[in-house]
Length: 472
Image 1: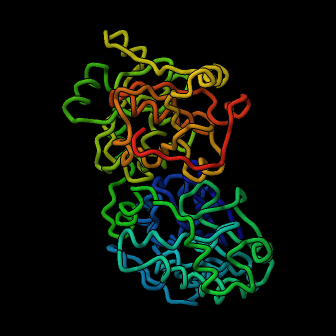
Image 2 (image 1 turned 30 degrees about the vertical axis):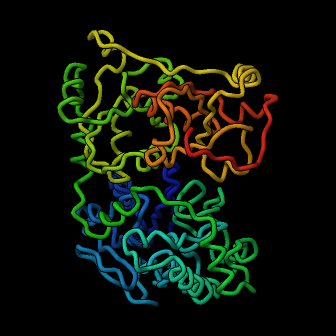
Image 3 (image 1 turned 90 degrees about the vertical axis):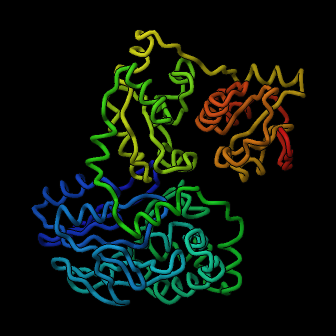
């Protein structure tokens, strides 16, 4: 028997490959299918099942295309009603895979159809649970995402189901059972996940707040619903894609998205298709020189989640500027969150753009030390903190205003065009995204290099007091 966790850091997502005696299954596959097929081929195994723990909100699953390519059966737990062929397993039903067994445990709470899969070895011993978004390391799945699709299903209702699922289906299992969750730290599907991506159930019973033995249902509901922030706007759209099907082949998406465009063709497509230009290069390279009007979302950080949080239309035409050889990576990562309308990339990059006679622009930047000196002399400077509200509330520079990147589209009306804004985040990635968006919309902006980490080393006064303003 082989168990492999396939972890994708950009989405903080874990898919799983299990093989026994020539038969394999995949749990919660991402959009691109080739890696899973290659793994099975290396083991001379046939992919028999594709197990889905629930209808995912944070990524588009590759289950439908993988089933078409391999003949594997898609499996959901009880109550799931997908708009395509799939096997809907019963609660406590057992599926055979080579010499091992998979037991289906219906664990509603994160969603109605949420299901945990219990792996039993050749002798019938419980080995591991694949919990999807029901149980994370240090946390549990948030119970409010379904409401974005079905308003009548309240977070309190789902939280109550989750309490029962954990205590009736998961906590009675032996302490040595290994927990393999669907996500790790950084995912928006939970509130306080650990950086660890696996643990024993015994440890989780000791240290996971949601598994406290003496916790009442009322305490649990309050704990898991308290402090929830608005989920990324693309979540309900991904749910519907995973629920209804009809998802385009990722191979076709990649072929279209990796079309090389000369600077003149790039400019023509940009204008005629009203495309969004995303520059995926490193933040230092982008800030020094970029195509005017392009928005920075760098591949070297949480590229796909930020694209999903910021681009409100999944059908938005997109053009890419990328480091040579990384164009396909950018297209794939956009497709993972449902953005399939990438039309091509700038062939030859910025160098070719300039050689064709087109102008470039740059982002004004300032070091944390220089900003501290400037701010000490002039407290009327408009300082924006692009971190999340929770980060800002915990500690921020005195006088700064919270302008979280997560909600930049809804908060844009708070800014004034006649002001100059200095912007920082924690380390520099989010602030550069923010400055690039604001600059593309005509604002006067300066990026503070190094973010709050660098500012923390200066003599600027910090406070945990939350100060907001209606007009920044």
